[in-house]
Amino acid sequence: MVEVLQKLIRQVQSAQDLDRDQVREAVLALVAEDVPVSVKADFLSALAHKGESAAEIAAFAEELRARAIPPPLDPQWRRDRVILDVVGTGGDRAGTFNISTTAALICAAAGVCVAKHGNRAVTSRSGSADVLEALGIPVQAEPEMAARMLQRCGFAFFFAPVYHPVFRQIAPARRLCAERGDRTVFNFLGPLLNPVRPDAQLMGVPRSELCSPMAAVLVELGVRRGMVVCGQVTDEVGTGTVSVDELLPWGRTVAVAFGLDEPGVVKPEIVPPRPVRAAPLEAIRGADANANAALIEAIFQGRERGPCREAALYNAAAALWVAGVANSMEHGWSLAERVLEEGLAARKLAELRVAARDAA
Image 1 (cartoon, rainbow, N blue to C red):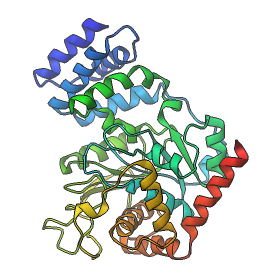
Image 2: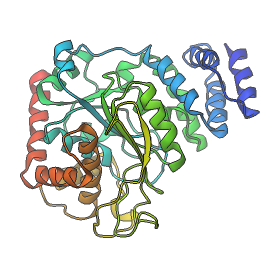
Image 3: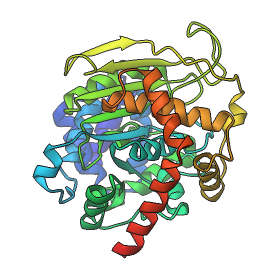
């Protein structure tokens, strides 16, 4: 397997894309115990430096999804509702607080069924698992417990290592890449590997040129309603007080939406930002998991009403639109704002904590 991966390294270093069979070979080598971590990291770095094609990303996602453990959801329950995920690929190195996780909880409080898939931090100080754990929500629950939480509370976290045991063989190589300052294809793959296979997805990416390819990947993987967004400096929906043709305080928002009108269609759209107070990126930077959890609670309890609250509202507005409970970004904002103003997000957080204690 070492020789196979070394051959593929040479191929991507010569700027040649991998075909489906070669991606399968690469995955087999990445999950093999006898392939050195350094060789795996060299492959992931070389692939990232070449730039992953949409076809390569889709092929990696399909190979890894086939090896995932499916949560035991009731089939009838699953068929009767839309399930949403709100997630960023990471890799923007903007250091913002956990905006996607905050927006996901707001959506759950609005009545949307949210299956949040994620991991601990790799390139940031607080990943989705880290901040949810700090909030008192179990993140390493076995599939049976997570499935019960989702069906009972309308929100559950699906911790990637629980559902993707092969990641244990890949994690050391990812860490080595991070130490080198390199991202990997797994920054893209994380949002694509949700074992619940959500119907609706809001995905953030760090570069605008990734919007269309990632939307095409989502369609290929069967997502019915979705939006892929990018701010110039963050992988969430940007906000600001100026035209979308100008540099917004939190990045120019570029989006590709699909399935909002007819399923399976990818179409570019510029999502017009709702005018909010201008603020620098520094105003929405985060810290460690405990600090970010305290910030989320402050937003939910109405004690934080500045740029962080508005960033969460903006992303929740987009997610509610994608989930089909809002008919526009403006409508989504109103719904999300009502959730905060009426204390529904704080109550949802309390409900999840109680459910976690009951299930323990």
